[in-house]
Image (cartoon, rainbow, N blue to C red; front, top):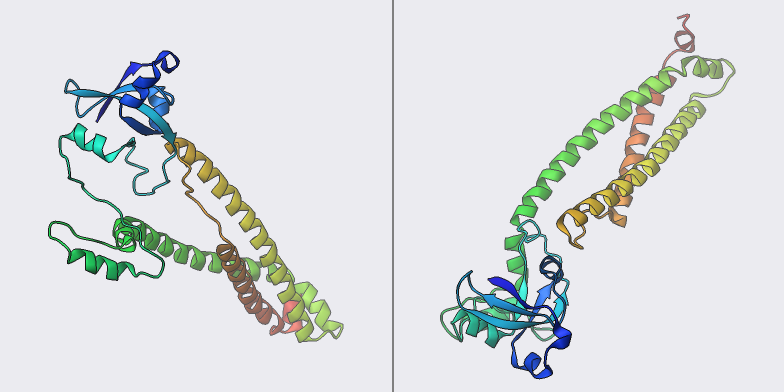
Length: 273
């Protein structure tokens, strides 16, 4: 499809000329690139140097964000079906069209009925088309899930090492508390509470860092692709899962480190054993 400027002064055009020419709708990015506005007249053709038709820009729209088309860098315009058929020279022919169903009608049942009406086409439920076109994103999602599992395991080991080192620094404090008659259970509970507080603080910092990273990611890629598509989303479910996982790992690491400390003889902790 080729578009070219034919008239950039719509205010001086006779009114009957607007109604006599076919009308089209341009997406915003294409309109900005061509520097046209509603009411401008363009030349539309299938290829450069071929037959062209005059069309009038009747609307400029923002297309629905589509992840499958965002990297293609394609521009879109919309014709009325008879005008498009006349331009293509292929009347009564379409590549695909959508059918809206009444509430309560199953999509797979309607597709089966439509397939039996005539030959030459195939009906698919929209969910099936969406699933087929999202295979790439499913692979990427599985890849990200694998990375997340590895990251969680590595962070759990790192957190356990930090807690063990932190508890090792409290050896003399634990020995003094044992010498003064404080029970192992009390010491264990105090160390465990400290581990939970550290994990909770880390969770808050992690959520804030994730929110900032998500905002930066969306701002950069939305500007890069000139789209309203949201690339990074932090939902309440993700935050809840992350916080619970952090607290769980902190609790487990604190238990291991605290239990290792309270089982050690106070004289050994003091360095005299």
